[in-house]
Picture 1 (cartoon, rainbow, N blue to C red):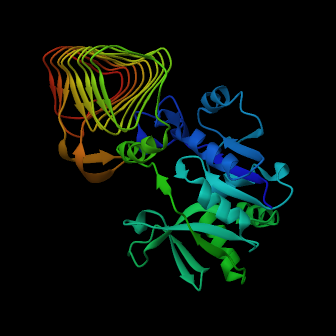
Picture 2 (tube, helix red, strand yellow; picture 1 turned 180 degrees about the vertical axis):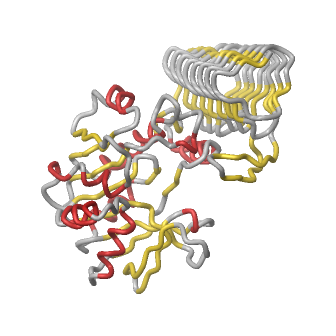
Length: 394
């Protein structure tokens, strides 16, 4: 049985800026836990005893968070050249067959277990996807991989590679051969194996979700928040209404008059209310304060954030350390958003605010607007366009 997993967690995630300016994308929170922790948990639940974690960009953030996790070996990819190059860094720590996963993709334990139990020497998890041309498109014949094409211009296939494979130790010989030719992507290595006549079994993943753009955090959070056990670890005052699947952390106080309907997660040492309404698919990080008469819907609010009274947030992402004064409003709607030269038309999107901003009272942010980290916005402003990090709006 396969006992080793290599998890690739070295990338930066530029398309997730400003949220990745001080942390790698694998550490962005989903359901109040880093994406990477969800991956590690799924791997361990599937019976994997040892994890080799390939780190690189902002590696200290990962090392600090996982320092108490046992069974993890760390290797460093100094230059983010590609997935095959990242995997090659783990060579000396792998003695037998193993599985490889990306640290920024949510996958369920059942799918990993299916791959572990598969008797084929090489296998991969695949998934049907509405936008296959953004990934490695796979073509299969009788459950076997026949061809893989990275980001084809023509959407000629329905299924994509999740980037999750089971390989024998001999794969490192292929990785070294391709690296000597300046080829560092795993897709090219896999295609070369197929060209040699190697057989790779395809298995369908039950749950697999990718985080590429900031708004993906909302979709993935909406899915994962449903899996967190309900429970109340804090203090609930009188006249609080809690409905559905709600998790409230230790030392959190929910003041009188609040209405919370799940699925919702509220972290530890928070203060909520009085008279705050929190609606489904919302997560609120640790040490955060939501002041009276505010309403929050389908949003991700990270640690150490203060939201002023009479504020309204919907479909929004608020990074850690933000101080937002009263009567803040993030309107939700449609917008065309530019990310790294790509233009994406997004529906039902609110504000996306980087960490450590200071936002005055009566500020309105238009749908899909991205505000960078460490920005200062004075009161009575309407924000219609993206604001770069370290900007002051007077």
